[in-house]
Amino acid sequence: MQRSIIFLITIILVQLLGGCSHERELNEADFRFDGPLGSEGAEIEKIETNLFRVRLSHAPNQPEWNNKLQFEITQNARGNDLVLIVEGPPRYAMNEYFYSWSYDMENWNPVHWNAGFRISPELDTLVFPVFEEDRVYVGHQVPISYEQIEEFISSIEPSRYVNVDTLGKSLGGRNLYRITITDHDSNIPPVNRWAHYYSNSHPGEHNAQWRMIGKIEWLLSDEGSDFRSRSINHFVMMMSPDAPAKGWYRVNAQGVDMNRSYSPDGADKDDQAHEPYIFQRDLENLMESDSPPNTVWGHHTWGGIVEPLLYYVQDERLGPWTEWRDILLEMDTDNLIKPLARRESRPGYGATSWEAGPHEQFGITTILCEGAGAIYTKEENKESGRLLIRSLADYYKGTRQ
Ligand SMILES: [Zn+2]
Image (cartoon, rainbow, N blue to C red; front, side, top):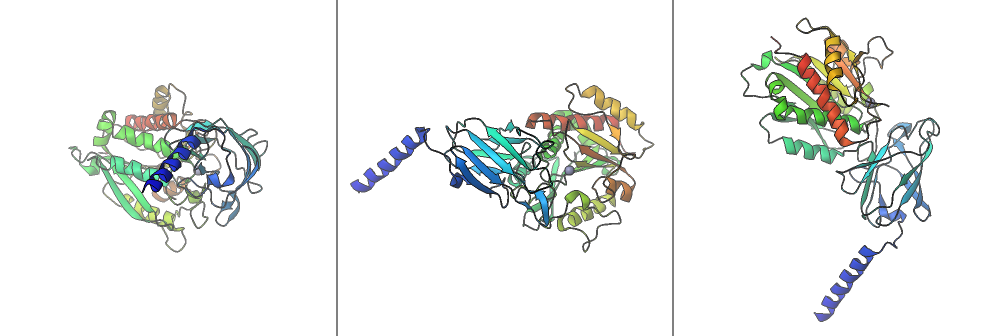
């Protein structure tokens, strides 16, 4: 008995002393690439103290598409800085966006590539500061895992304005959600409410997901009460929920580019990838309902600030699209969003995208909501979403009828 107590005290002492020491070096075994933010197939090799080389693997069936660099340092980070030399598969930039690191997966700090994708798309270096805690998370843009999306959904689900539909399972067995927000107590019948559908097809474009969370939070706030009473809003937060744990940027488990997965001739189980078929079938059901969506949004990221591009159809109940542009311009005092512009005349991705596709299939206004690669914080990404939905609320005045 006495011996086991002494043994226990010794263990605790060793742990306490170890916890205070800054002497411990990071080793390969301290890095984990298979957590909620992961990078399938990544390999790490220690070169010298606090200098490691990481070789990224690639997406399923896409040998040139690198998985994003996402990992967890599970222990021993405190007191160490870190330099990573990162190598991706050839001919595809692995470093076009910033990354973020965190001690808790909530408060994220941006970290930027030394060279950048224009200079060195396949090999680049990330330099992290001296860490103050032992556990560190690193992910793409301002990251969010599938599990955190689920936590977010659980946090809003008790609201009487929120309905959550589970439409099916991903190939990896994760839930495929659609969130609906409207005020059921409103005296405006559903058939007279405007309806909008917001999606994210590229799973690694996390800034786009924070933009959508900003929209949802505004809708559920006091400020959103008027719009909530006269509109129905559908959100698909992540069409490829298997991706964050693998570091897949654009694809699902079949390696299909999620924004080349739309079937403008109609959902087709045999021809479409697994998750896109389920979501498109669901969207088609919504379009056949009494309150079909008036707009369909696809949320993405590319360089610069947020850049919403319209596939526009003039609705006779509304003013011209320039009115919407001017509303948004006036609201955006922090310059987070480029002036609304039309997409139609520019070369597009074709109707297999979740923007051109629904535009062609249903003849409605759709929005390719791009950009935000240069927005480095969760709060600013959410703010851009709040601005977009506030402008939508002002432009889509009154009710559908
Ligand atoms: Zn995208």
